[in-house]
Length: 302
Image 1: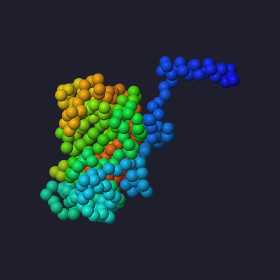
Image 2: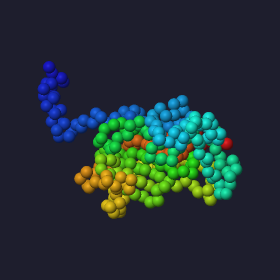
Image 3: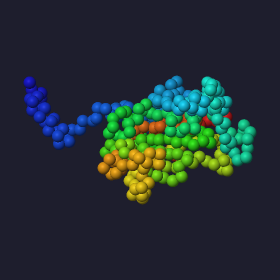
Image 4: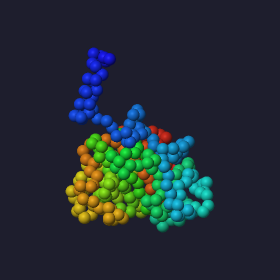
């Protein structure tokens, strides 16, 4: 049988040679980019607390050993209602103004539904998207595949430790995790055996001494800027400090460490939001935050 004048057997040989030479590349069938084949508009919303199914793209994990303290719950930000089911107990939000204990000291609050994430065990209470996060780019599993440069998170400071993570992937498919935490004091690179390298960065909310109008903030991250920081910190940081203090036994040599991302940013692999905070929206955009965001993405307080 001929196809455009070329026999099937000859066509198969051409394809086989192209595969061997790397002209044609077959993607890992176990790696699924959720949005890779979708038309990606300039702005993509991953989470909205007022949507019909806020956690439709996310999985939820709580610490089962702390039924009264570890939970994730939708409530009104200004009234904290409906209250979570017993035995869970809401923490008291701190004053945003120094030395004030009245209701007004909470500043402007949102008269709308938000997601309350609370737990004393930060690492065991979180939401993540996609629902299953691979340990590194070549380990299989689903990734977001969103190519937008800017990530935006609308979050309320509840006066407790808080952290979030994003997975960034470079053009060569190398993945790294950027972790931002309110308890971290200085930038640190963590490299553990078999897992993506982690760039751990400090994060700070406006202090009460600055008299902010609200405990709500919009965090904007330029994801492309983080990719070269992995290699920069690796050169500046002593090798003895590269292992996670919580898992010192997992320190591995160069031969069994996942390669660091570098070069050009490709796409977002995942996002994970830990306790303790209140969450309003997560979205991505191609433009910097100095440009006007859609009106429905703005924060409107009482």
